[in-house]
Structures are given as C-alpha cells and as structure tokens.
Image 1 (cartoon, rainbow, N blue to C red):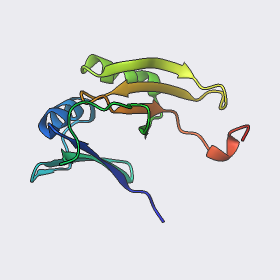
Image 2: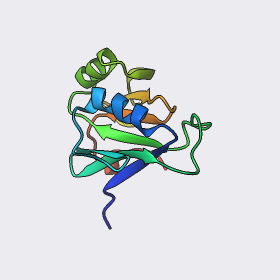
Image 3: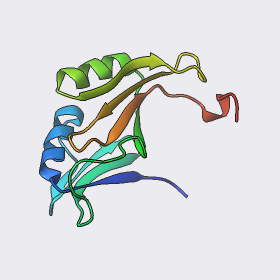
Length: 125
C-alpha cells in the first residue's frame, strides 16, 4: 500500500484554498470545488463535504505533516504569509534534532512542519 494524500472537507473550501495557496503556492489542480497541492509524492486537497459544518471541534484528532529540510525557515515563511500558529518550532524529545511546528487552517484543522526522520530511530513504545 501507499498513502498518497489527504482530503480536507469544508463548508467553505474556497476560504481554505485561498489560505493554503498563500502557504503552499499555486495548486496543481483547482476545479469542481476541489483544490489540490502536490507535496513530494503525496497531495493535500480541500473540497466541499456535506457532513462538514463550521470549524473542527477536535483539531488535534488528526494532524497531517509536511516534511521539511528547513522547518525554521519554512515556519517563518508560513507565518509571514499569514499562517495560524498553534506552536512555534520545538525540538522533539524522542528524536533529537527533529523540529516540529504546529499550525492550523481557518477551519481549525491542525498540520505540522516536521524535520525528516527515520521512524525506526524513535525510542520507546
């Protein structure tokens, strides 16, 4: 199997598309109410969903990650573009040298900038 992307449903997908365009640049696809950006070998899409209304009541339930070789630089670029900051970059205890920054979109869906790391190097569990 290969995980290849995530679709974020919204009552107002245009608002999310405008937000993510400021952060991620021009989308690879924009049509039929859906907007998609390619990130590495995967994608993130936003679009309408009949069962989604208002803001996310549990924003930490699902957090999607964007791997970055320069978390601090990309964080600054996202912040300067208007990103909603939940937590500024911090060094993750379980993987020394791994930076994580948590952000949100206008529907209160969380996503993170994350340093590349080998999951097999994680301690514990």
